[in-house]
Length: 75
Image (cartoon, rainbow, N blue to C red; front, side, top):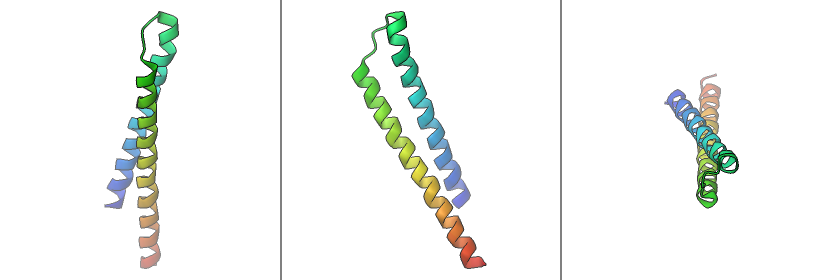
């Protein structure tokens, strides 16, 4: 259970990082290529990805704490 929780959290962190990178690329390209990028939408995407990353990191942290507690009980 804990191992799958850690992998789920890690996947969520990786996905959020990808979303952040995509937004950064779109923002960076908006000035160079003359593309119309809705900066307010991109900022909402960045804030959402940041929240996703924090939540996923918390899942990993709690799963790690649970594993440690289990090992302490078994020792």
